[in-house]
Amino acid sequence: MTSTHSPKRRVAILGATGAVGQAFIRLLADHPWFEIAALAASERSAGKTYAEAARWVGDDAMPDRIAAMPVLACDPADVDADLVFSALDARAAGDVEPAFARAGRMVLSNAKNYRMEPDVPLLMPEVNAHHLDVLATQRERRGWTGAIVTNANCASIPAAMVLAPLHQAFGVRRLFMATMQAVSGAGYPGVPSLDILGNVIPFINDEEPKIEIEINKMLGHVSAGAIRPAPFAVTAHANRVSVEHGHTVCMSVEFEQSAGPDQVTAVLRDWRGAEEARGLPTAPERPIVLRDEPDRPQPRRDRMEGNGMAVVVGRVRRDPVFHVKLVAMTHNIIRGAAGASVLNAELMATRGLLDRP
Image 1: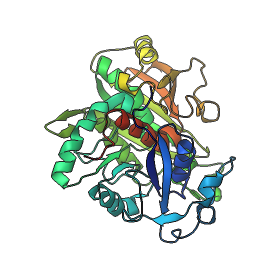
Image 2: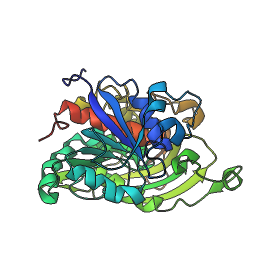
Image 3: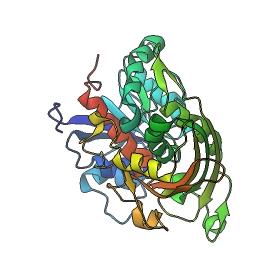
């Protein structure tokens, strides 16, 4: 698939110095449709060059062009770009993101602030592209000429990806899930080493409530300009583990129609997601990759499947309480954060939704 938009769209990254901001830079540095035109961050970073402001995390080198770019304030008056990728945390995003939307910018947000608003898409292109239909209502209700589109919590995304085809095929009734979440999900510097090394922390602030409501919204339907959540019950346990990248989710699922491991495996193996999401530059060839080995998926071995954008599933087996249980894993910084936003923007570009109204 090729974009009909040429030359490349100028994009900005808010919160560019943090871990997710750096992931945006990596994903957008050579993107065929988008060009990084502006980097913005907190007041303590504004006015510096990016090399001065950011502690680059990773094995690769900071791109020379990026290193020399000035870091701007997160103010629409200072940022010359119609499309804005936001890696801001919730404390800053609540005020900054709507300011950009009021100023006519399309904001692709990773923050929780607007995720559960009924007129804000919690978008996963393979699953719920039709949720973009609420943007007209969002603009009308809020008086914005721009808009906000969000992606979900990094642990909700792999669960929702797996559940989408299963809910369509069998109807999900109840879901029990437990997460094992990588330390990179806490940002940088994240969790102190003496807390996490050789340890499991069975608490991540606000994580379980987010998971328990976001999955239903992503699998819901649009009615009267609002997103109506799917009605099934979700209960979640969230744990931080000593893994660098890659969130693992163990799920037990009960269906409205009885289904066993063979039926579930067949549905997951055949599923390719929404047709309009296929072939986008950031989209994986297969959004769900099944592993047959008894000890997979594993973050170290499987997190870069589909360039970090696929959800890897294994251990599909019968559950003695519900119908089936399985394990899903994805790269939390790529599919679970920056890559999800970039894919959302690509879908919106093909629909003409990035053009100013």
